[in-house]
Amino acid sequence: MFALDDLARLFNLAVREDAAAGGLTVTSGSQTIVLSPQQPLASVAGRMISLPAAPIKDGRAWYVPVDFVSRALAPISTTKIDLRKPSRLVIVGDVRMPRVAARVEPLGSLTRVTLDVAPSTPHTVTQEGTHLSVKFDADALDAADIRATPTTDTLQNIRAGDAPQVITIDLGPRFASFRAADQPAPGGAARIVIDLVTQTETPASGAPQPGPGGVQLPPPNVPNLPEPPPLLDLPPTGGLRTIVIDAGHGGDDMGAKGAKGTLEKNVTMSVARRLKGSLEARLGVRVLLTRDGDQAVAPDQRAAVANNNKADLFISLHANASVRPGVSGAEVFYLNLEGYGDQGQRASQAAAEALPVVGGGSREIEITPWEMAQARYIGESAIFAKAMEAALRARVPMSPRALQQAPFRVLVGANMPAVLVEMGFLTNAQQEQQLASDDHQNLLVQALVDGILRYRAAGTGGTR
Ligand SMILES: [Zn+2]
Image (cartoon, rainbow, N blue to C red; front, side, top):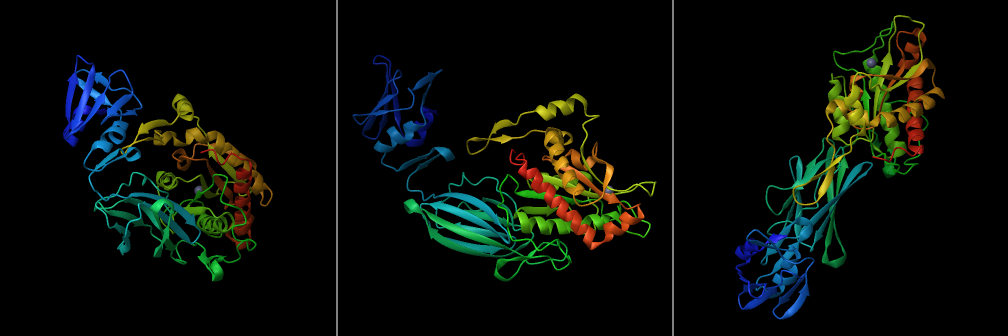
C-alpha cells in the first residue's frame, strides 16, 4: 500500500479526514475522491470504483492500495499517470519510458539476444569495445525484466547502461561480430533480435567451428574424433544446458607421470578438448573448460567456473598413479562427506531461501557455504557417478574398485552433480600407452558422453 501523504506530496493532492462522516476526501484540482475506511470502494468524481482493499490507518497515517493510483487517481489527474506494478514504478507525465525485456538463447555457433520493447521505440545498436550499446529514443527505460542472464562464450551480461536510455550487452571472450534485426511484435511492441557470432577456431580452446552450411566440424587440432556424430541428434532438453569439464592439473602441477614420460596434465587436457567437441556437437549443450591451456588452476577456482556459469554437471578428469605398476583401470569418484559431520548433513537438507530483490518480486537465492556446496548434491552425484562407471565399463578397462567416494577438494565447492574420473593408471606401462593414444582417448570420450546420456535418461538431470 502507499502512504496517502506520500501520494499527496507527489501529486499535489489535498487530503481531508472527515471524522464526523467517517470518510477521507482527496482533492486534486477541482476533482474529488471520497474514500471510506470500511470499504474497498472509492467515489471518483461521482463514479464508484472498487479497490483491492479498504484504506487503513496506521498511527496517524492513512494507507491506500497501490491500485488507488491507477483506478482512482489516474482518471482525475490532469497529468498522465501510469502505474507499472511489476517494476514498482509510477510514471507521471509524458515520460517516454518503454518497457524492455531480454531473452538469451545459446544457438551453437551464436548467442541470440532478443529484446522486446513496448511500445516500439526507435533505437540503434552499436559496438563500443567489449560491449554493445542499444540506445533508445526515450527518456528512460523500464528494464525491470532485465535480470541475470545466462553467460555464453560471446555474452557476459545484459544490464541497464550508463545512460538511462541505454541497455548494455557485455560481450564474452569469443565474440566475433553481431547482426541486429527488428521485427514487429503484437500490440505495438517491437522485437530486436541481436545475434552474437562466436569466433571460429582458436587453437587454445579446441571448440568446433562452423563449417559449410552451419555443420559443426571436429576441431582441426583433434584428429580422429569418435565416429562423425550427426549434428544435434538430441534436443538440448533434460535440464542439461551447461557442462563444465575440468582437465586435472596444469602448469607446474603435472600430476602423475608415466615411465615413458606421459604427463597426466596433458592427457586430461587432450581428453577434455575432445569431450567438449563431442558434447557440443552431439548434445548441443554449452561446454566450458576450467583451463584452456597449460596453466595452473586452484581447485576452488575450478569449481567456481562451474558455479559462476550455473553448470548442470561438473566432470573432473584425471589419470591415476600407483607404486605398484600392475595396478590399472578406470575409476569414478563422487564426494565423500565424512569429516564434514553435522554441518554436511544440515547443508544437504537446507532449503533455498527466498529473498526480496531490488526492483520487486523475489527469487530463490541459495545460501550455502562454499565448503558445503556439494553436500546437497551427493545423492545426484552418486547417480551420475554410477552412470559414468557403467558407460566406461562398456568401453575401457576398469579398476576392481571402479566406483568410489573420496574427499576430493575440487568437488567440494561444486554446486551441481559432480564426479571425478580417473581414466586409468599412467604408472601401468600398457595403460600409459593407451592413455597417450588417440584411439583410446576417443574411446574414453565416447564412454563419457554415453555416461552423461545415461544420467540424463535416468530423468534425474532436470531437477535443478
Ligand atoms: Zn590427478
